[in-house]
Image 1 (cartoon, rainbow, N blue to C red):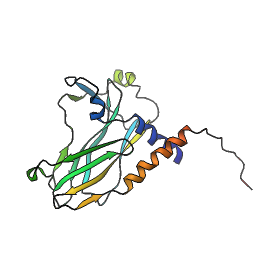
Image 2 (image 1 turned 45 degrees about the horizontal axis):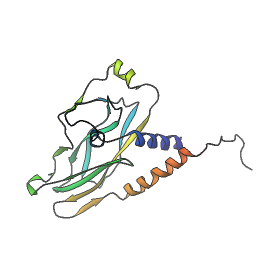
Image 3 (image 1 turned 30 degrees about the horizontal axis):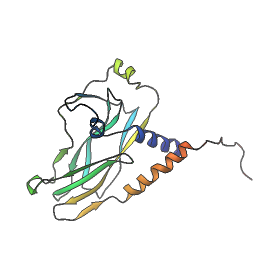
Image 4 (image 1 turned 120 degrees about the horizontal axis):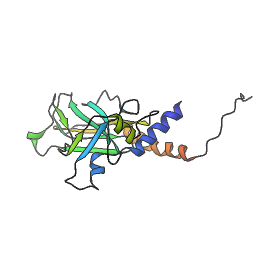
Length: 192
């Protein structure tokens, strides 16, 4: 079972992409339509980080209707007590998003909720049966996307840094190697 979970994480990490990354190769005037991926098909998973001042809220996985690229959609809440000057969040093994206040008047204050990379050309449309068929959104789960806060710099200069992020990113190639190696069937006999 553990190997199945690793395979799912790797496969989803390979198929996932950020809206920014996928939009760079398209016409800047082009509209982008997305559907919300059913949770039994693609699941966003948020890493428990009790020391982080940021919480992911309204988190879901979107699928671009034209490119079939998976991307996370989320907002962030500063549940800490200090104003934040900058932060980095990520989907492990795939994409990072950075934000920095332009000046002290733009700090991310305690209790505020922030949306990153809003684009008025992006539109979430209902997932109809026709779209479900076109996007092949049936069958077993295809994977999950692991979201976490990588680092936060507070207005006073202190920082939060998730040390587990580097370890998780180092682990992704191990999963890749395991996927590319030939599988040996397990023996039903017990070693003596």
